Image (cartoon, rainbow, N blue to C red; front, side, top):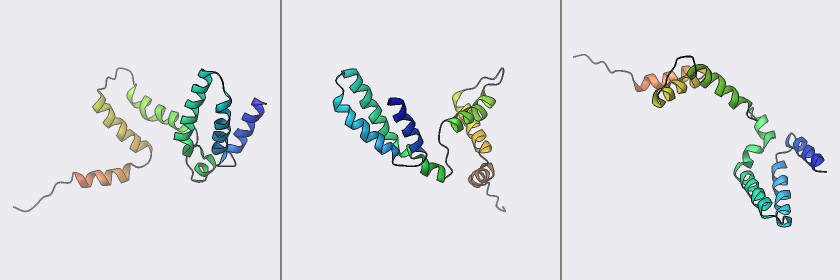
Length: 131
């Protein structure tokens, strides 16, 4: 029964944004029936997580907007943006310097460097006037 319910929820996430609302309702109805204090506490924590994050669990809308769903993009970014640049052999970094380098690397890797540079260069262009 439990496995079947979980499989149904997984399938519904791909077709309906309201799936997370249905799951939240299901869990809220189950909460009063729990008798063990530890189980109630754990379920309440899960319900809090759902309440805070359910807008990020509307996968149909996210996919239609061409936004990533899942942690793969984040893990890949951690590898390509941070690890390849900051963890080379013999490198030592202080936090402020590393933050600047990683910001530039992230802008470059995201393909937004030309727009970023236009904005940055406007802030640091010298005014030259005839004397």
